[in-house]
Length: 395
Ligand code: PLP
Image (cartoon, protein in one colour):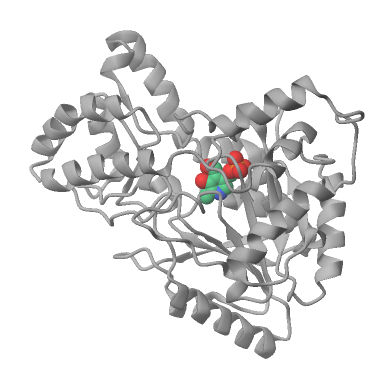
């Protein structure tokens, strides 16, 4: 076989989003693009803010000598300082450029952190429903994922379940807030309890356990909410994030990791992270994008536009009888599947030209995901199809 058996198995088992994307292409050819309602992919439909283009123009007009050369594997000092300043403000911790590595997106940052910390066979707790790629990233670095469900009614942390899963092989816990696919923001008091729990377990098991906070949606928070900063609550914590969503730059692969300055052996951790950024083959985050985001740390796309889409879908779908937690942020809804079999429900929705991802794709059968980072007019056009689907389901 041309590829490893394991990879073959992964491709077959976890390609829901891709399958639905291909189905969308097929349906668009048959019915026309405006008759197909594709809610499958978390790819922002809006363009980066104007400041991004202003910066791009000014760099193109006045190129800096050497601006396309290799640099320190951690990234430009100027960019890391700009990032550190914003995190220091949000967390109240003395974060500096020394605790920041610029990466190829949050995905790159996650791979760097996992590579740096995992010994073979060590476990990483992931909270279900979870971003589909976590398991692959953990496997990339010889770790073992351990699924722990969040509260099935609220999708908030289930601290008792996390405690029960921690053992003498646990190396890290990945949290994601605001959350893909549920849109939940974890409450400050449960993050505080998580910090206390991890500290107690570290003492008991005599090992360092990291909380990795995956936060690419941190600036996409609604109704005046903000995302509590993990550094305030957990000493051995790392933020992994990117500008894929808040500046709508997913194709540019620009993100970073930041370590809590209070982390045990933080300097060694940073040395490991810089080494892994290099040796995983990323070498450094894209140079041009580093220059750009250094100037854009306080900018973001129009969050109000996403909130409007959330309200439009949430209000209409709940009125039709669909049941779901109201999202606090990100751009996803994760309703209960009206059919026990979420895959069958997603197939039924397809007959109405509505494309969704089954909860099974996030380790959470019985639900389905709607990505509403789509054109508002498409959401409006899709409402009659949703109504017909709700009627067919008799909800
Ligand atoms: N983590 C979560 C929860 C995501 O939803 C995504 C992308 O959709 C990522 C990480 C990866 O984002 P990036 O483009 O920064 O690699």
